[in-house]
Image (cartoon, rainbow, N blue to C red; front, side, top):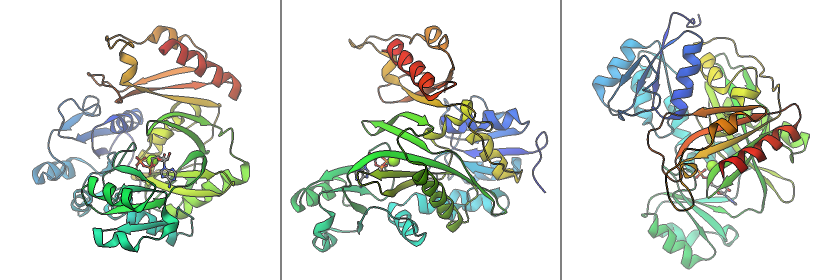
Length: 381
Ligand code: ADP
Ligand code: MG
C-alpha cells in the first residue's frame, strides 16, 4: 500500500537546499514534512511543517522523527548511515543505510562499479603509507581523493610522481584514499535513475555538465555533445548500478566521456542532485517529486523532457561586485528573459562559492535556451 498524498508525513535528514526542494515537492502533493537538521537557519527547516533542530545521531530527535513520520529520506550524503539504520527498525527509509554507506566511501563505490560491470578509472585504495610502494606506475599521473567526505573538488590532490603522491597522502591527513589514473576527459555527464521498492527503474535524459573550480556551473539537456548510443549506455549503466544496490529513491551517477569516446563512471550521489535541477522546469515530473514517489511507493513513470534547457548555478559570488561590494543581482532583468525560472534557496548570507540558487532557462529549441542563458550570464555579470 503506498503512503498516500494528503495523509502521510515524510521526514528528511538534512536541511539544505536539496531538502528544501524535496519538502516543497512533497508539500505540493499534499504531504506533511518534518526536517531534522542542527542548523536553526536551515533552508529546508524554513519551509517544512516541523524542524527538529538536533544532531543527526541525537537519539531523542531520531525517535521523534520516527514517531512523527511514515517514511524518511536523506538529502545529505554524509548523514551517518547509522542514523538511517536506526530509523529503518520501525519506519520505511529510502534510500537504505547500506546503499548510502557505499556511496559515502569511494573505495566501496568503485568496487560496486566494478561488480556492476561498469568501467571506471583504474585505481588503487591506499590505507597507509605502506601502501604507497605498491602503487602501479600506470596510476601516475593521477588524482588522490579521500575515500570519505570529499565534495565539490575538496579532499583531492593531483599528483604526477611518487614524491608528490607521498606528500599529498600526508597532506590529506593519512586517511584512507583512492588514487585514480588521470583520464583525458572530453566532457562530463550525469544520469538520474529512480528505482522503486518493487524494482522498477526509470531514468531521466542525460545531463551534460560543466564545472568551474570543482563546482558544477552549467548543466545542459539534451546533452549537445554526447552521441545517442553513449547516452543509452549511460542510462543502462546507471540502472545496473542502482539495481545492484537494491536502491530505492533517486540516485545520480556521474560519468566521464574520454577523448577516445569511451564512457567511464566517476561517482554517484544517493539523492537528488544539483545537475538534476533542470527537471524542475524542463520535465513533466521533477527529481524531487520522483524521490517522493519512490519513498512512498507511488507509481514511477517514465519522465518526459518537454523543453531543451540550460541550468545555471547561482553562487554567492554574484552577490558581490568585482571590488567586493555587496549587491543584489538583477533578478527583474533575468526574469524578463524567455523561459527563465528562478529558484533561490533562502540562505540569508551570500558567500563566495556558496550555492545560493539556480536558474533554469528553457526554450523551444536548444539554441533558444542557450541564448537566454547567454543573456542571463551577461545580466548577472
Ligand atoms: P567531487 O566529489 O568533488 O565531485 P569528483 O570525483 O567528481 O569529486 O572529482 C571532481 C572533478 O575532478 C570531476 O568533476 C572531474 O572534472 C575531475 N576528475 C575527477 N577524477 C578524475 C580523473 N580520474 N581523471 C580526470 N579528471 C578527474
Ligand atoms: Mg563529482
